Length: 294
Image 1 (spheres, rainbow, N blue to C red):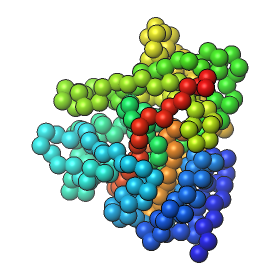
Image 2 (cartoon, helix red, strand yellow):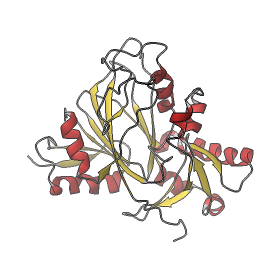
Image 3 (cartoon, one colour):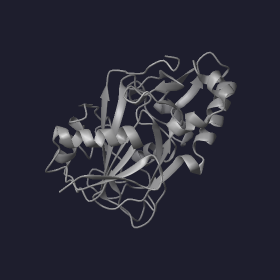
Image 4 (tube, one colour):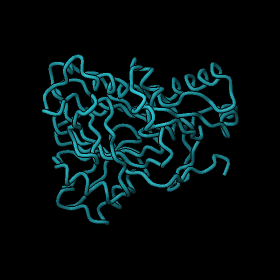
């Protein structure tokens, strides 16, 4: 079987056919996928139907894994999934639909906001792998934005304005925007704010992109209102339809994206009627941010 890489409508999304990663995640196969990520930023591999072990092993081929804290649980409450897996679902530890008052509902509301995975962590987050185990019959898409194209289309004056700026990123900013403000001090202490450049250079491709969205709280050295207004202006520009793609899930899909040049969000579905079981692995490494003026 020969692997094929086909552009899907938008210039930054590709579909890869002709491989079952549970049977073949050789270096040569993963190199084809990584090359496609360099070109497109998001790749879809349909009908993979990976187990947890499969997904973890495939992801490790791209680098070291980050480990999920899976916040939102009550004190003493077990996580539904093992720590290599981020639980992007509406399910509790018994795999039933979360109760209306469950704190994990509050935590996951922020997934519906535009964001880049783990931009609130100092370590460099590279690829995310999201596996669709159970998908609702309608809704629950994942939207993506191509932040390279966004940067390319900024005016020369805006590029000059933001070239050397840094933003403070905090997961608690996105949770506050989503209406979640009652997280415990022990939860908040696990993830303090970090700063990230507003413009970054991809270490593999050399292309510049803008680092934005709901984890970004303020601009370093700028009055709070002014900085947030700039972040809002840039985000509104970035989510225009010409920069975005919405992935409609089928069970078994594996979608991989490069966090260094995209942002994404989940879309609503009837999460009190339908189960949605999505499991994410995420690769991280030492920071490889390069100066935008390099």
